[in-house]
Image (cartoon, rainbow, N blue to C red):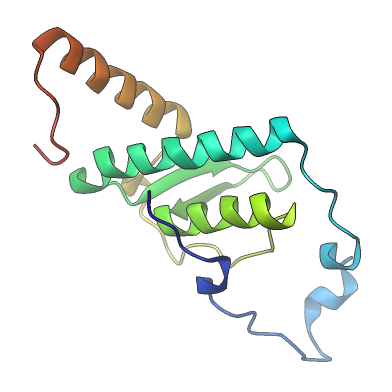
Length: 139
């Protein structure tokens, strides 16, 4: 499984800027993070394992990552594979995810939902089981 540190995320362009427009918003880092319980940690580890499989299967086919419908802003959020892996890793280690810059002008056709990934992986597993030959990503 690939691992990218959350430090690999781009730095906050407003860090230390007293005129930062986000200063008016509450800063989630001001509140202590609630440690994840064993069940929550296990779910994130399972998501990270699934994410590695999905990327191995779909990246060679031109899929750049996963799209998530945001309940807060009602807009789709496009997450490249590495950004999502880093965010989940940060959630696992810190108990929260820090804000990140959205993808710049993403092409929605290059992103799929988590459910699509799961269905694709299940279909490939069924194909392997039926044919008896393992699937090689990109073929």
